[in-house]
Length: 308
Length: 308
Image (cartoon, rainbow over all chains, first blue to last red):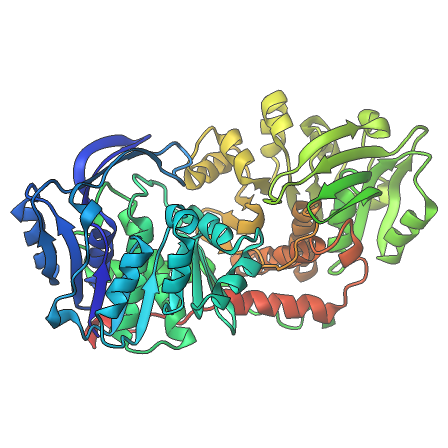
């Protein structure tokens, strides 16, 4: 199945306790589509400025990503600058220059309009709704959002959520959106807004997936070297939806496997700056890390311990 | 196998966003031994004052806990007062009155000295070492500690750790003890101090167990109603060591099951104030929650997804 993503392509300047990089390739749609490209065909919609180099476009193409929807506008590409402390869980944003992203109105190319899986990355919820008006009944729609939209455009966001199947969101944002401190209850409140599945990302603590039938808890992969957490959430979403698009089924079992593939892609991306670690993974690396998640979480049944 | 615990018996005054209780039964040894009592025989060593009521001793006895080592001294029982915010992850201590606990020197009764499993709850590491001098080569020794001893009695603590098989510790404390921000590396540093297994408790995020062979990640049970997190860590340790003592084997597979039984007991204890929820569990409730942990974490193998 083909997978449509609408989001940002950006240049990031990032400082972590382990190093510093200026103007490296980033953006939600970039991380998402690169992670998803290992699983399925990806249709990218985003905007870049005149300064966006051909070699970065060629990289996306080399991953088999369809860039017909990557608009180039006069002006500069979106820039973000941030730093992380030793906890690495939350970025401190130092500068945001939206540049061409400020007036971005996503146009879905005709060739994308039958995409069966759609990911609305973290953009203005009004634009998210505009995207949905341009696609022909996708099989599954997922979206991300952030505190800025939850507090500033709550009504628009709730309107978008009515059409969304899977909300992928941070734990703090889930609490804020639901106005409820307990995460289990918060997920229930969010499901009442529309999404049948709520995936709560908890950084180094992994992810929880809630639906009407069950809760699934996935750990994050315990890494000795986390270099740069930028893009982890979008790479998670890319692995998650990329896998679902490739299996063409959305059963509980597939959704759980998809959460693990999302966690696998996130675990790779944080091992280096930018997309460096996921530019050229081989399939065996991805499968091996999946198997490591299996070993990481496996335990035997209890048996009949109280009747010995 | 018999299980020895040395720790505190206390009266707690606790305020959470959901209610408030004064002078309720608490203390590390109380939570630990009650949780462990569902699995094995427990030998308790602690101290109480003249004010400690007979009905609380009778409760411990009713759980089959051996209270021969529960000293009564002139003076008052240890009191702790604390409160939790909505995050519920860390208590803000308002008052600590050590009372009879201040001069506590644990004496291990002759009848306990062959205990095969030993838990040194969070007490002065010098007292922990004194306990170890009074027991005859136990099969497994586990201990807990806290920031106060890590910073104030580091040398004594390192000395105790040389004899310890399993350290059960909070994530912040693991980082502080190892002087290392990355948890995987921190666990490696701590293992170099002596413990073959390091269990890192992460509150609502579950626990990680590190040894030379593997890492095991266990989630916390996602509860809709967390009433009072007091005692969760000690109840975890009680379920963990209680199960190990009952199985009489310390293989990797048993240790992992033990982490889940620890998580099960912790998940019950936080559902009500004090020990209320674990005073009278039935075995089926415990096994059912273990099975829920299995459902919570289960996912299928990846299969041959890249060769379809």
